[in-house]
Image 1: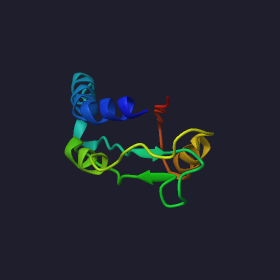
Image 2: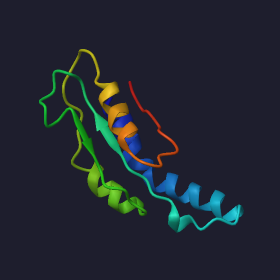
Image 3: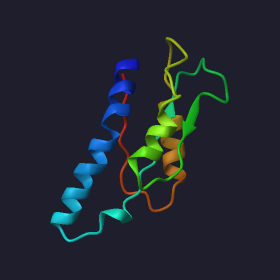
Length: 102
């Protein structure tokens, strides 16, 4: 999982840049787009580490700041993917969820 986390950290800016181009090409103001990152772990993680989330952000640097100290933890066993989906479901006006897992 650590390689996926590293790639996510490295591509946040690319995602924002590509979204901006697509929106601008379609006459939509890219500054209105917000992104939030939720990070779930395995069930053997501590209660305070099983799920972490960023704030809603309009800039990639803010998400990078959130992600930089995040590291994989919890080891083997069932992953708490439904905890991530639970938190996503609680969001109002959410239009997309991207799940990255190993």
